[in-house]
Length: 272
Image (cartoon, rainbow, N blue to C red; front, side, top):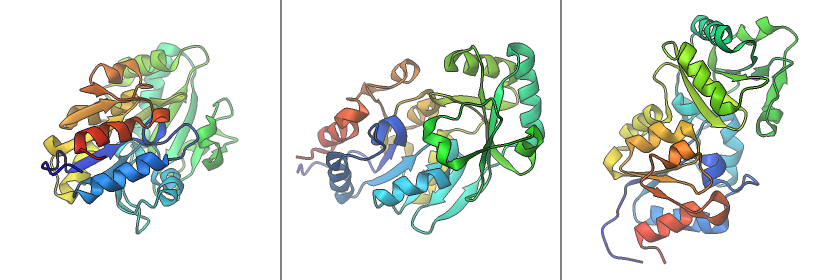
């Protein structure tokens, strides 16, 4: 191992499409590399669009017990204690107005909501095609009013004809003054509290950890990672990343299936 000074104090990684392989596991090489980087004194933090409840099984599987930024930056989660340190909610009246403005422009949309808190449910309308990645935590509702019964962290929308990219752009155009709109993955166009992003969540976590943005390296794969990559000292997009993310990255790593995170960290930290 190199005796050069540690290049970064904080390693921020998205989960799906980035740290995780397509089978939702972390490769042995990536696990070893992260441990070697942490042995230099660096910290690793997960920054994911998943809710804390949805993130927990993965973190448990890889033995992760530190802080994690979940819910697109809206939740700061203590994985070791299984508790929320902070949680940001989306005003339901604002969300309803944003949906109305968007539907006035693009027509009816299918809707799902993520309730606030560790025990919050994911509920969806009958016409919403819940991606397989979220099926086990989601429940259909008989009446749309059930979606709005409890405090929410975010709203998800789908459209019968528009692509995810087209829908995200259209909703942002129509309601971007009310909510933040992000494309987090296939089938995941999300409405968040205005101004919320992975960058705001990471900044809060970094402050608690005593690290700084210029001493942080971050890895991601989707447009919802753009704010995070813009906040850090070195931004890495995966080879499988969305073109919009690649356009703002400092470098392009190999894909999540090719240990892209590990290869970059081995080079930058001088790990052999």
